[in-house]
Length: 172
Image 1: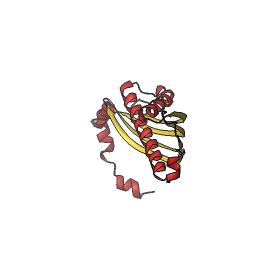
Image 2: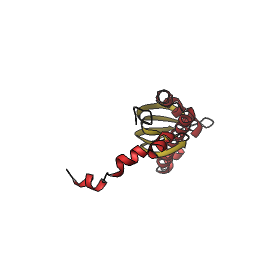
Image 3: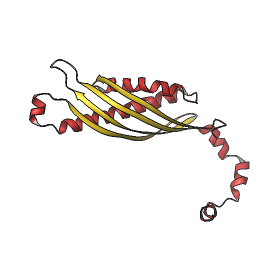
Image 4: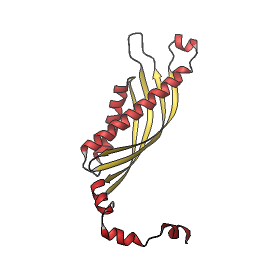
């Protein structure tokens, strides 16, 4: 399936070490920039699918980082709040998602460990996030039109007609 360009397994490690303003838009933009080299090497030519996958990854990472910071802020005491101390947290990034855009379907898994620090800004400034994370991406992209043609193949039906999965499972 891989040799015939029907399925594309992809694995990538994307370093994401940055300092950005604390906003979903800023974090998402930084993730998109970090993902660009990996996406440009994708073996399929579906730019719309690439865009959807990148946006989904950016949304997931930005959301998980914000949840982590909110959890750390909830643990502060009154003195931490008054003196506007920075907060730190570690998180495990784990997410799976599925996207479908004709003729391709993508199943993606994200993982990684992050250290995030929210640095409090001055009274009129914007808080910043310092993030150290390596995003591990595993994806399987299928050309669904080719897979549908394979499923309808009489040659495949004949070849699998005598196959018994239970017999295969219980024999050495």
